[in-house]
Amino acid sequence: MNVDFKHGHVSVDMNDLKEPDLTEGMSDEELFSVINHSDLESEKITAPRYSYWQSVFRVFFRKKINIVMLSLLGLIVLMAYLYPIFVEYDKFGVLFICRMFAVTEDNTLQGGVEQVVGKE
Image (tube, rainbow, N blue to C red; front, side, top):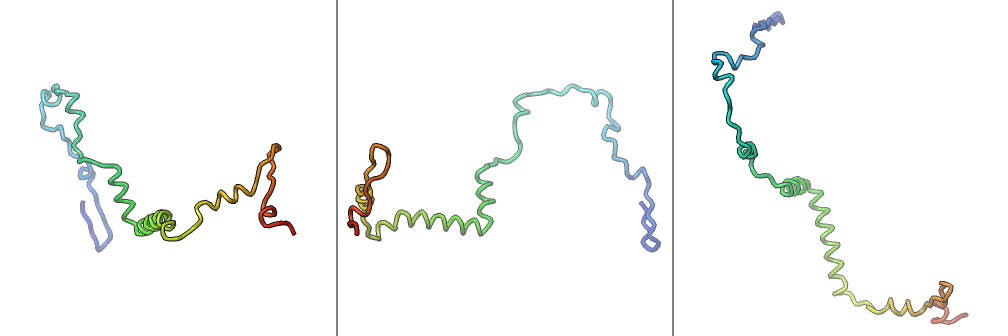
């Protein structure tokens, strides 16, 4: 290939673009010889060990927003367990509300706050 930068001229020889012939110089016996085939050898993988989940976690933890959101989720779950320990509340308050209402035979609610507080 000849390149002339001053005049912007490029000349390419077509023989330079051809791929080399790999079979050149080989005898017919080498070209058409029988190759031993082993099913066991063909199943061997030469690639390094690959763990799908390790790759997933590596990609996940590269982004800072993923770490922030995972920390926020962990904090919410942690508070769901710790909050009832530090805050006093009535564990049986729901039972009192359920006793205020009664279901009749026609599946309607009977009772309510009026019975507990009184009608005015």
